[in-house]
Image (cartoon, rainbow, N blue to C red; front, side, top):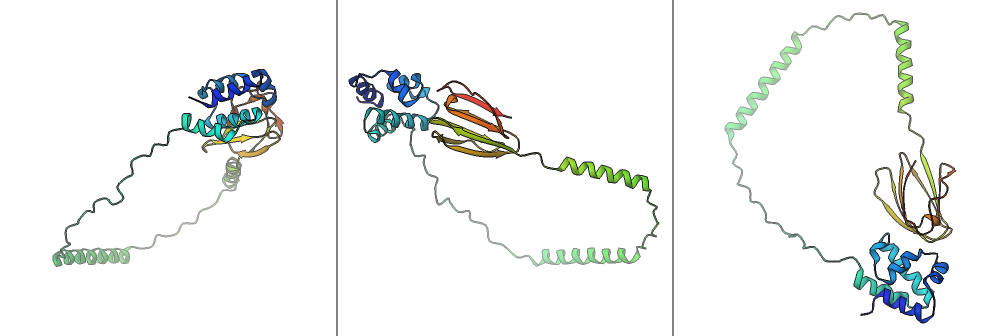
Length: 235
């Protein structure tokens, strides 16, 4: 049975090329290439990464990448089993007919009138409280103003974080900002993305040597060797 890995390995051997030759051309870790030829896609960071590598590997050998990807989707793609649909027309609940009772209406009216009369009588019998002048102490006022100024400082928003992500090689990355869900990207060499956050960035990078990060104008430096998967939390 033909699989993406067997077809790629067979064509590579037919062209008398080694995995090292393919690694130099595609800049893909040799362990990933070996996993692809063995159809062991669990070793790759994600399904999107597997498809990108298969497409690049196919084109490097002159094969039809569409055919290779079709084989991958049929044999190793995620299951598309359809969940049973819920009943679109749930049974209706039949309510008992409403019976109007004049006795209940009379009782409600009596209660409303009684409460209204009691509230009005209480309002007439109350005397307004004498107003007492209050002397404001200047020292206390100054202290309160100082506390209010300090509280206002505490409420000022924190400095926003800015992260520039630049790919120097074909690289897959999953990005999570603050409490937002992760976003996956497949970035090509020269592509740059700028993101902002208030608390932190959480990144999973599929090719540490193919990406650079600049946080608030400061270069993070070397993230790791080519082809290595790394998890990074900034700052």
